[in-house]
Image 1 (cartoon, protein in one colour):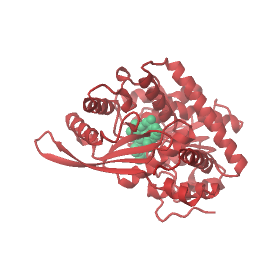
Image 2 (cartoon, rainbow, N blue to C red; image 1 turned 180 degrees about the vertical axis):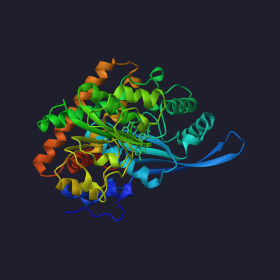
Image 3 (cartoon, helix red, strand yellow; image 1 turned 135 degrees about the vertical axis):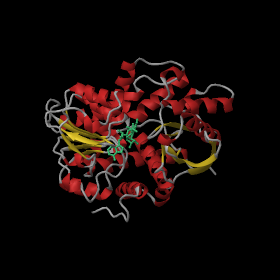
Length: 422
Ligand code: NAD
């Protein structure tokens, strides 16, 4: 049955459509359906900040806790001019399902502040972050809700959040956020974790489809944390990265890129990606998605593959490094083209998995070697891939709906075990 959404670019509507399709297949009872469909709590904060010129500015920030049934909330904080409550709600619910897919003991949450970090000074960002954290201090905490970085935030922002929360608690609480600097209770391997998880599920997918790493073409849209780490690790593993793009545009070259050189160009020399010397055909970041490839990895933003363009995708495997890059109507088209989909709530779950490891290490006060982190990550990603693909095959659904069904079932089961308080 085709998926019906009134506005396929509304991420909340898309998240709901997927939840509903999976809940219907599961035959989820009505009360549970309504309980899991809506967020547990939505917090809106008007954040006053003294700007460098002495003016007072007020920013709007959110924290949405979608579900705390399986454990504390878990989810990033996004700083962007495009943040909306609907987007934060959608991302919070995805976090619930993602944590359940990889079976880690967290619920789902997400935060965001409407601001343009590119246009703010470091001091302004610090003051905004500290006030936002102070206002949230009753709602977050290692046992309540554990934020992490997302678009526009990084380990420096997490260090400020950790310090502000610790000042309120009167002692150092490293486990209140993850994605921290290594010297402040961060985990080895966290920076690479999402990209490493992408590599691990791609390895499983090509094995399943009888393909080999050598000569396997990969196109990656987005060259930030997820995109460039996936590119580097897959390049090292023997894949051929034939397309890369960031916000400035993309490059496609059938011969493949020397990824360490591209990383040096973009991240060390701070030069525009499309100007990379000898880089092949220049095109927009969107156009890159439609070039011939074996694995396509959207790792930038939402709503890149839609009903308007999905028929142009030419790939065997779609591995979603970003959250929500494919809309539900686009899924319907890709199904007809027999694309093997690694859905976001599985494919990019390496990040939250190592965030879980960071939280465990902080609480235990004992830190693991990087090889231990990566080995445990491999166990989680490979097991999750196997469970989802097996479920899809045995229930006659696609991988995405299977991932949602497994996740919803796990959360619903935990809720039944807990029962309702009062
Ligand atoms: P980032 O800010 O480090 O990088 C984003 C990249 O996308 C940049 O290279 C930017 O130039 C590029 N980009 C932005 N708009 C673009 C466009 N229109 N076309 C092409 N490129 C564009 O962010 P990130 O942490 O790499 O996150 C990327 C995506 O992955 C987001 O959807 C995020 O929610 C998701 N994600 C991130 C993590 C993580 O651990 N960082 C984990 C899970 C999911």
